[in-house]
Amino acid sequence: MIVTTLLRLVLLLAFAPLMLGVIARTKAAFAGRQGAPVLQPYWDLGRLWRKGIVVSRTTTWIFWAGPVVAVTVPVVASLLLPMGALAAPLSFEGDVILFVYLFALARFFTAAAALDTGSSFEGMGAAREVTFACLAEPTLLLGFVVLARLADGLTLNALLGAHLAAAWGSSGASLALIVVCLMVVLLVENARIPFDDPNTHLELTMIHEVMVLDHSGPLLGLIQYGAALKLMVLGAVIMRMVLPVDTGNLWLDAGIFLGGQFVLAVVIGTIESVMARLRLARVPQILVGTTLVAVFAVVLVLR
Image (cartoon, rainbow, N blue to C red):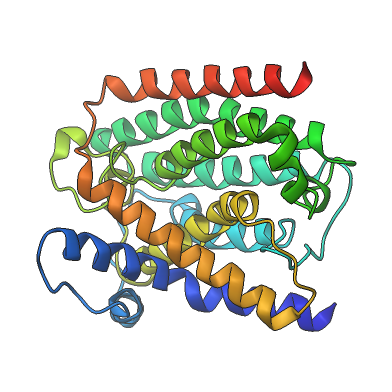
């Protein structure tokens, strides 16, 4: 158990920024450019952590807590979630609810840190972030309802167990719909195109990035690192559904999980390369639509 837990933490903490590098390299390939090295996110984090910090005198401890919680929450959430065939070390009935609302806690502190600066501009971004999160949260919960119906328990270990391989034969339509819905949630929660653009500088359309404009140096590095961790943790849910493989070999299972995450990063980079960013008014409509699709998946699995 100790070896498995340490391996899980190493996979998460060491390789999460690499997913961002794979996404960037995929987008560069689609654009016909060489692009930055795959390891560029590590250099960027190192550069930020070596810089100084400029903090407004209007801020309080909440401004400092936001980046810390942004890193802590994905790490804690990963302990509740199976990483491929690597079972979660912390498991109890109903841990799926804690998993969902841990990210709500991180979102609250990030939005509160933005509001703590006293900037109306950052307050606008916080309002947009919270609004989209409220629309995406039901989809995530309904997706877990489908998985709970197919599982023998209410823990994440049970929901994402080896039974999913057989479930694709009997309830493949419901699982396919949930995979699509969770992919939408993944893009929304991680501020990816077509819902947001982490590299945008257009002030009127910024959502997540506008909330962290006042963060600098190590604090900004923590936020970016937390975003990479969050991407990998939420991606683990999708990859376990798509690849419910359990070889029984610890290292082979870890390799399959890591390979699946890099494939997911390529898929995300492809989506961002072939799609344009949606108009802001369209985002709520898409999220409501995914909720309805998730409801339909629940109906299919309950019939």
